[in-house]
Amino acid sequence: MKPPEKPAKLRPRSASRIGAVQALYQMDLSGIDLNAVIDQFVATRFAGEEADAALAGADPVFFAEILRGVVRRQLDIDPLVDQQLAAGWRLVRVDSILRAILRAGTFELMERPDVPARVAISEYVEVANAFFNEEEPKVVNGVLDKLARRLRAPEFVAKA
Image (cartoon, rainbow, N blue to C red; front, side, top):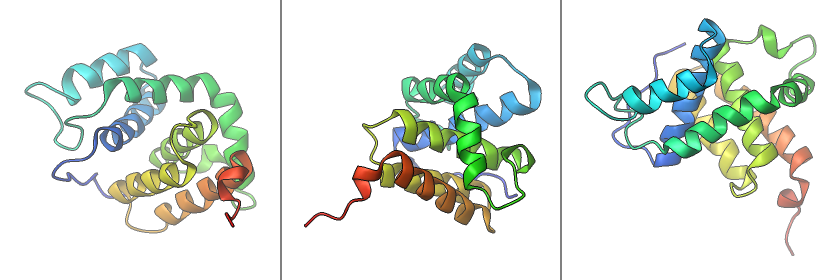
């Protein structure tokens, strides 16, 4: 795994997605409370003297919606992702960052109809590219594409 790249300036929602993945990872490893991690990121990582350049300008509302949604829907999300992984693989066995990316992307596909499925997939592939330089972005693309075609089939119907 490579450290996240620090792009010059991300769009607010793109920065929010990277922050949400980092926060989900932090919650996964440390067990920090949902509201505490939201407060920490908004107060220190998005703004202020200690702001993370990659997260500057993040939309704190969108960030919090992703986190709260993943936590609220995790019992629905994990089995959906498990079904899309290669035979013998379970979500609990994949890298923690990759798991966070897949959970956040699946949440958006499930509950954010305001975000087109193809946009959500593309955004989370870019998030994966910020953290990984090997096969993980392809895994994200494959899993989220399969889920999108299942959860949002009408968006993938060819238009005449």
